[in-house]
Each structure stands twice: as C-alpha cells, then as structure tokens.
Amino acid sequence: MQFTSEKHLGDDHILERDFTLGDIPGILWTPASITAPVPLILMGHSAVGLPQMYPRLLDRARHSAAQGYAAAALELPGGGVRPRSAVTDQARADLRRALQAGEPVTDDIVDRLILPLVDQAVPEWQAALDALLALPEIGGPVGYSGGVISIGTRLALVEPRISAAVLFAGSFVPRSIIEEARRVTIPLHVLLQWDDEGNDRQLALDLFDAFGSKEKTLNANMGGHLGVPRHAGEAASRFFARHLK
Amino acid sequence: MQFTSEKHLGDDHILERDFTLGDIPGILWTPASITAPVPLILMGHSAVGLPQMYPRLLDRARHSAAQGYAAAALELPGGGVRPRSAVTDQARADLRRALQAGEPVTDDIVDRLILPLVDQAVPEWQAALDALLALPEIGGPVGYSGGVISIGTRLALVEPRISAAVLFAGSFVPRSIIEEARRVTIPLHVLLQWDDEGNDRQLALDLFDAFGSKEKTLNANMGGHLGVPRHAGEAASRFFARHLK
Image 1 (tube, rainbow over the protein chains, first blue to last red):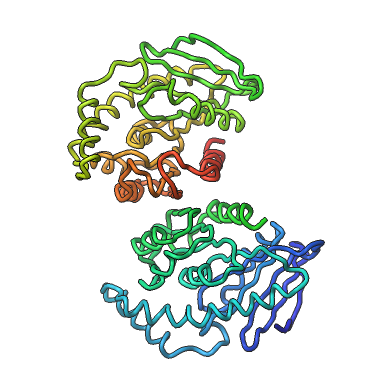
Image 2 (cartoon, rainbow over the protein chains, first blue to last red; image 1 turned 135 degrees about the vertical axis):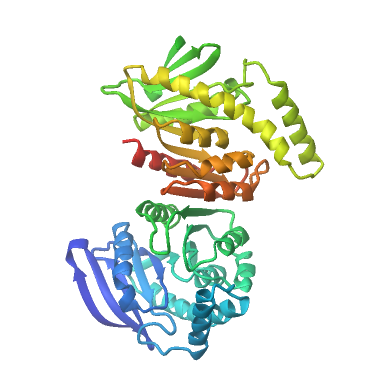
C-alpha cells in the first residue's frame, strides 16, 4: 500500500490519505490525533467510482472519526479509473432493459451482475485489510459498512477479522449469496429502504431471514435508495459502538 | 378518574398512582418533581392483566420518567379484575386449538379475538386520555406505545391527540385493521420479533407496508415474543425523544 497524498481536514480533526494498493485506488481517513490504535470501518459503496462517491463517503468517514474509528474505502472492480468488465457491462445493460420493459429481473442477470464483482472485490478488500491493519495507528476490531450487500455478506462469511457489519439491502442479491448468508454468524445491522426503486424488497427480507447470526437487526425506513433517514444512520453508529469497542 | 393509592418510588424519583376510571383500573407514573406539564406515553400491554404485567410496565415507566414523560396503563377489557368476555374466551380457545393442531389461524378466529377488544378498548383509552390530560402535571404531546398492535393502530387513526406511536407487531391482526392502517399518518416505530412464536411475520410485514405514515421505521430483531433486545427498547425511546418534544 502506497500513500499518494495526504490532507488534514482541519475542522473535523481528520487526516485523509489517498493510497494505491497495487493498481487499486483507495482512501483512508483517521482521527488526526491518535493515542492508541483505533478500530477500523471498511466502507463499502457502489461501483460508480470513488470520485463520484466521495462526498457521501466523507460524510460517513466524519461520523466514524468522531467516534474514534478509522475508515477506509477501496475502488471496486470496474469503478472509477479501474478497467470495466464486459461481462458486468452486459449484465447492467440487460438489467436496465428488463427494468425498463417492466420484465422480471432474472436470476441469470443478477448472477452475471453481482457474482464476478463479489469474487474479485472480496480478496481485494482482504488484501487492503492486511495493509491497513499493518499500520501502527490502526488496531481493531474491524467493521464493514454499506455498499453492495453481496460483497458485505461474502466478507462477513470469509473474513474472520471482521467483527460486525452494517449491511445496506439496496442491490440485487444472487440466490447463491442467500445460501452463503446462512453461514454468517457475526452481529449484523441491516438497513432497508422500503420503497427502494432498484431493489427487490422480498429478496432483501429473504436475505435478512437467511443470515445465521444470532444478533441481527433489520432497520427498514420509508423512501428510496438515497433516502436513508438521519436517525437510521445514527442507529447504525450505535450498533458499531456496541460491537467495535 | 379517581386516584386510589399513591406511592413514591424513591430511587427512581417517580410518583406511582393507582386510579380507577369508572370500573377500569389503571396506573399513572409521573416524574416526582415536575416544573412544567410533561408529555404522556400511553403504555399498551396484553390482556393478561395489570398485576401480571406490572414488573414490565414499571420498567417501561422508569425509562419514560427518566426522559421526563408521564406514563399510564389501563386495564384491558377482560384483563385482571375486569369481566371476561365469552366471545373472546371462545376465540382464544379456538386459536389455541388451531395452533396446537398445526392448522392455519383463520381470519374468522382473528376477527373474533381482536375486533371486539379493539372496539371496546379504544374508547376507554380515549376517556382515560381526557382524564389524564385534565391533570395539571400532564401536558402533551402524547405517544402510544406497545401492547395489542390493532389497538395501537386504531388509536393512531381515530385519536388526533396521539402524535407518535411505537407499535409492537406481536399479535394477530385482522384484515380490516390492515385496511385502517392505510389511513394512519402519524410517525410510527414498529418493533417486530422475527421468530415470535405467537405472531404471523408476513402479516406483520403487510401491516407495516400498509401504514400510510410518511415516517415509519421497522425495527426487527431476532428472538421470540419476550426477547426484545435492550438496544431496540433504546431505539424506541429515541423515536419518542424525536417526536414528543
């Protein structure tokens, strides 16, 4: 991991550093004054690219830093400057066509859209975690938050260093990921926007039901994909406060 | 409304008063030192009777008083010392028989179990509200919390003095109540125990979906009817803190 720039966000007492992990860009936010290694939150996001996601990521990182956590984001495969995948582009086009035609979104489309992304992104997040935890200012525990829920689900299953996860049920979920969810055991806090236009509510409820975790909370609110109310974000923060100390 | 006894719960700085409203027993808890009229939470509960519910009601009243609210409970029709209803007893026996036989709980059973209770309890709660709001120490706004969700739904619809409600999706719901829910508009915070043995989860989700409120949150957690986790109770408190100030 190479740091490529560093910036003090003075009003928030945050140190923001861009980094690259091989060819993959990422951003790390840490509280400016650290006396002991801090917990870390891996901040998931959609594949539109870190530059486009930056304002919302920064807002989330600010909340994390205010609670004394570091927060990191990592560009997804196909996002931002990273090479696009023909398979994913085709699947996205097929999804758009199906939605516009009012046709059902088939399992085949969802699998082609999500599974290659999960297969590639999860080892990348794990490599980033290796590098981040090697920094003296970052200790643990580690939480995962938001982004593509199938990535969060796979990470929760395969990465034992993740202690708790806030998952955002806002993207299509392959059936095979629902099966993987049955073996997830870490505490989960699942956010669902009840009227999310790009999401299948029943599938989200099926996924929530499937998780094997003894402690899991579903926090569902009115509104669309981007309408998560402030109090729901605060409830997610309190979930991490319970589990990342 | 006649007060029949009064007791200071010293450690909690709470004044607890038993009262009767006609033939109906109730309990009122208020913060011991009040400098201005306080908001009120009507605490719903099941029909097993106030004496049996007392420890849990007191626990909830303590939280309310700590936030500066008064809290009141009112015996339900058929609960405690109040005369039982042959119709309700028959419906309850039919419900038990259906559950034991693994048969579906019919709409007819649910209607006979719940609707007469709602029809009788709601005007009683409204009469209690008249009396409670006439006390100088109680101002408003008024919240409703817990108990039989169909009673809370009807109250939220017909009683304009109730500003916000925490509803516990833990009892069977007649189809007609789901229709009434569509016309409810006050902010709602709905608790659901995902594995509640005496509850129909899909019906609870249908009810949540039906509520017409622009602000509604579903907070679902693992475990059975009595297993509401502490953090879910705290989230409900924060909901009232947002809406009863």
